[in-house]
Amino acid sequence: MKNIKIAGEALPNMPWEERPAGSHAAMWRYSANPVIPRDLLPDSNSIFNSAVVPFKDGFAGVFRCDDTNRRMALHVGFSKDGIKWDINPETLKFEGADPEVGQWVYGYDPRVAKIEDKYWVTWCNGYHGPTIGVAWTDDFKTFHQMENAFLPYNRNGVMFPRKINGKYAMLSRPSDTGHTAFGDIFYSETPDMEYWGHHRHVMAPAPFEVSAWQCMKIGAGPIPIETSEGWLLFYHGVLRSCNGYVYSFGSALLDLDQPWKVLARSGPYLISPQTPYECMGDVPNVAFPCAALHDPQTGRVAVYYGCADTVTGLAFGYIPEIIEFTRKTNIL
Ligand code: BMA
Image (cartoon, rainbow, N blue to C red; front, side, top):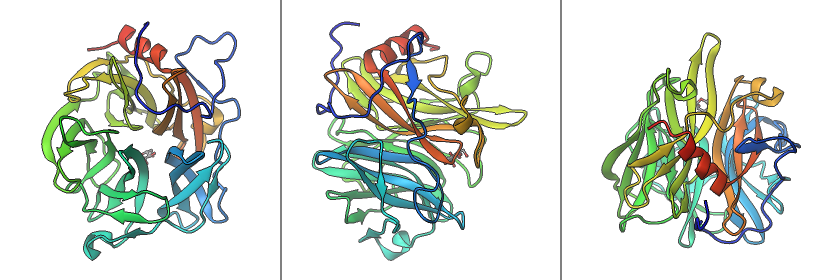
C-alpha cells in the first residue's frame, strides 16, 4: 500500500481520534458520538444526514434539520473544529431559481462539493416528488439555485470534486415517491451544471447471498475522494429485515476517468448500526453517510453520518487502509 497518492488540500485541523486499542476495524466511531444532538436548535426534532466542508480557517456545512412539525429543511452551520457546530436557526433560502423550481416544498440529505472556487450543494428537493436540487455558494451566505438536475424521482445526488473529461459529474439514485424498495447508483455529466446526460450505470445492489447489508438498495454517500487507486466512494446499502430497513455503509473504488466502472467493492460493511444512538431514534438502525473530511498528507478521513435519522455521528479511518480493505474484500 505504499505510494498511494491522495488528492485534496492539507487539513491538519480535521477532527480525529486514533483507532481504539485492540480494534482492527477499517473504520471506528468517535468516542464522543453523537457530535450533533437532535435538539441543537430550539425547534429541531433531529439533525442528521448532513454535509460539511473545510471553509476559511474552520468548517462550514449544510445540515438536514427536521423541525418539530417534522418538516424537512436545510440550515447552514459553521464550526472551528468540525465537532462543535453553530447551526443557523433560520432555514437556508435559495435565490435566483425559476420561481416554479425555487418554490420550497422540502429538502433533505444535502451534499456539498467544492469544485474550483465554488461550493456546490445538491439535495433531495421536493418537486412533484423527490429529485436532485442544485445550488452554489462561495460564502455560505447566498445560495444560488439552478435547475433541478433530473426528473423526479431521484435521491442521493453526489457530485465529483472536479471535472472529469471536461464535464462536471454526479452520481445519483433513481427512486420512487415513497420508501423506495430498490435502487442502483448511476453516473451523469454536464457541461454547464444545467443539462445533465451521458447517463451510465455504476452499481446495483449486491446479491443477498454475497453481501446482505447492501442487497436491497444502495446510494452514494460523501463526495468521492480522488486517489491514485481510483475514486474512493463511501456508499450506503440497505437490508430489508423482518423488522424493517437497516442502513449500513461500505466502500468502493471507481475508475478515475470512467467512474461508472467499479474497480472494487467491499463485501463487509465499514459501519453498521450497532450503538444505541444508531439503533434507537426516529428511524432505528440507520447509519447514513453524507460527508467526509480528509487530510491527504496523513491519509486520515472523517465520515459524518446520520444516526437513526435523529443525530449526527463521526467515524474515522485511514484512506490507504480503507482502500486495502475494499480490495481485499472485493465482491466483484
Ligand atoms: C432514506 C432517506 C434518508 C433516511 C433513510 C432512513 O430513504 O429518506 O433520509 O435516512 O431513508 O429513513
